Length: 337
Image 1 (spheres, rainbow, N blue to C red):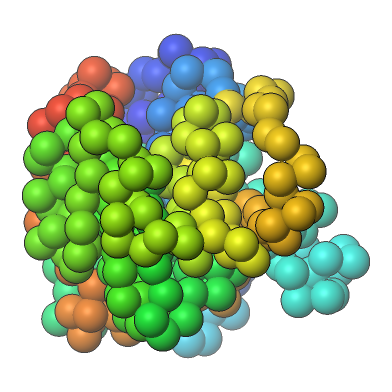
Image 2 (cartoon, rainbow, N blue to C red; image 1 turned 180 degrees about the horizontal axis):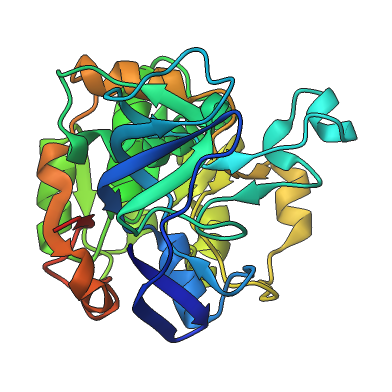
């Protein structure tokens, strides 16, 4: 089968490899669509650790074409997406219910082979059936939406809150929609690219700010003089992570959601954080949110059809990193040709 394999940062090749076979408890999926994630880009530029070489990609959907022994809940022909994170269920974090923090976490596309390939293998327990109400491309948004759900839950967004989203890429657009469903009254998006600001408004933002020509703090204070109850930093940009301190109200919460470069640091005024009782949290993975993500996609409570800007064939996968982050780019979807 053909697959996009990353051998080291900057070295991705489309190669022909043996088609794997499912072991007991596993299924083989014919991949139909696979989204490109910020983590994929971080792997490519060397900002995120991985077990090289590995088939890249983890936001996917497809059709089951073979099942291993002892698979009981799925059958050939089922349309499925996946939680791409395999956990041990025995470490201290798993036993405390924090499976996403598992000491032995093995994520598809990072630690074990992923889904930018004609076929993918995964445990039965990690596969989730979705209905004909969803296209394969829409279903490929399940994993990122599940991550957005987790980040929103961590933020504690409440009815009537003011939310500021820094960055309106694919994840920023999912986060703002989750914030709307959590009852936020003001959803303010700061984004330098006009195309993305327009999409944010389509998807439920109440206000947008162009940080290239507007002062984010001043514009925010016009809407809520106290600042935002919750600030989501959705780009992994170190400057924006530090700036978030100035945008959040007393007692508010900052969620560092974007994928940051490993080993980098920022400077913040710790007295300011302490004196204003500001909560700062990371948001990692998608614990117990996959089923909810599918439900929200199937009910069209979250819109993703307008987020796809480019469809790239597997054989042309290397194009994705030329397109990633450009002004006319939103979500990149790899389709299997």
